[in-house]
Image 1: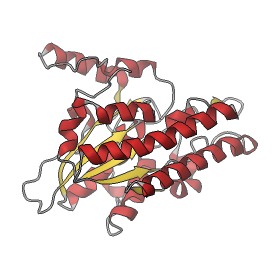
Image 2: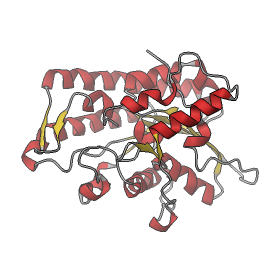
Image 3: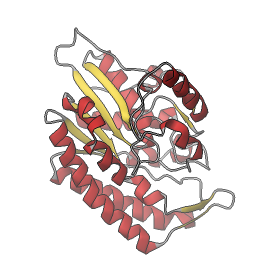
Image 4: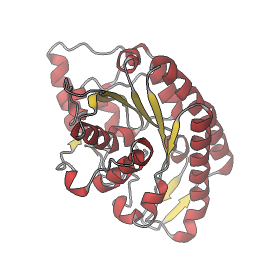
Length: 289
């Protein structure tokens, strides 16, 4: 499997900061799929829930460092296992005190066939069962590997919302059941392996269509990412919350813009990780998480 790592960290880290004044600064590493990377509903990268967590920690003088360079759109749990075990992950993880993990949805959602034009949704049960069994095995391994690579880190496993609010209600039940099973697996494995599970589905239920605005895409709006960040803080520190007026101004970068900037950096003799294809593959992504 190819190794995908963001060499243009500055493009993806609008809130990265080093704080010499912080008494107990967190070294926060975000790990996982496009939700961790901050993919928008319109095929771009912007501030996601991980950035909003980092920003809130910054406002409270609790952030020492933040990186989401180990997050990439389309990552499955297999990809995250490979990432955590790689030599490129050792440096960012070795001093981590806080790690969030978003992994598992792509194992399942890549099996779902959705037609936004007629509101239909379908999947096959047997492949879905295999996918969920793979998540069960892999999420435990991911947590174990993170513990080895980041022995000082508190680990939080993020749950998922129902990703298809715009389809007909009669079409939702099967996939909704599978996503509920996915969340149950993530919760069980997180708690069994010494991590904290963060549920986000409740925050999306009453306003799902507004928080997932594009019927042809499963990614949330900035407000949706705010809800995810605040779900994290209910587990991390209930006194901390991201308010609507603290959201950054949208600054989306298209995949093509990221690719173009990356090429410019590579021309400047920045070393390229062996086997890394950069963001070229983003231009070919399907609308998974």
